[in-house]
Length: 142
Image (cartoon, rainbow, N blue to C red):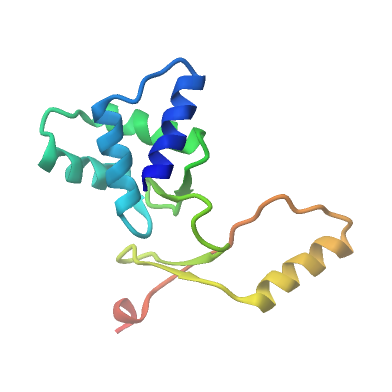
């Protein structure tokens, strides 16, 4: 995690900003979490440690983490954004429950190969992609 904080600090310095104690705490909290976390969830966790940190500071710090390439912004149709650490895992896709909001990550080589084949057939060069499948999880279907 310290490497990520150093990269973040370098990014901030290159953009004329400082790594404040508040920004560092927010970044550390983000990197300690697994999965997809909203700004609101990070804010709640950070406030337990430092009650003086505001939501706006959390929001701006998460935006900076995304701009630096350390966080990937995801929108799953819930009306708010979620973040996941960028570049820490292999490419994956998502199953999203529209009832409870559960997000299941999955990988499938056949889907990846099919997407590449379709792009090739159309003379399309893929630079990035994401697959999000919406429906009901096992628990919500019962």
